Image 1 (cartoon, rainbow, N blue to C red):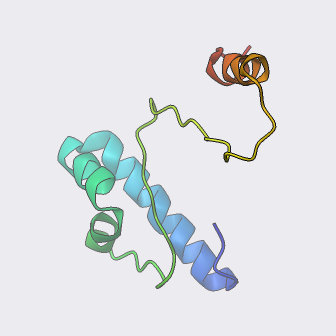
Image 2: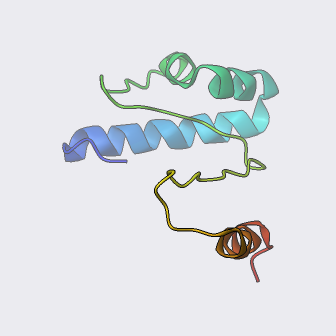
Image 3: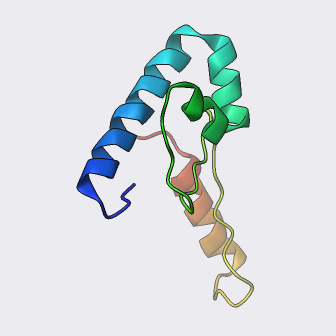
Length: 90
C-alpha cells in the first residue's frame, strides 16, 4: 500500500505491523480489526489517510475472483483455473 508520501507510508506500515502483532496476542482486538479496521487502527494511533481503503481478512479466507460476463471462458478452462487456485502450494 502506498499513499505517495514516503513518511506517511512508513508510519502506516509501522502501524499495520503493530496491529498485526497485537492481533496475535489479543483475540478481542483481532475481532475489532476484522470488523472495523479503521477504528481498530485508530486505537493504536494509526491515522489511515482519507480515501484509503483498509480491508482486513482472516488468513484462512479464500477469495474467488469472478470474471465478468464477457470473459471468454468455457466450463473446462474455468475448472482448470479453479483447480490452480484451490490446490495447495508446493
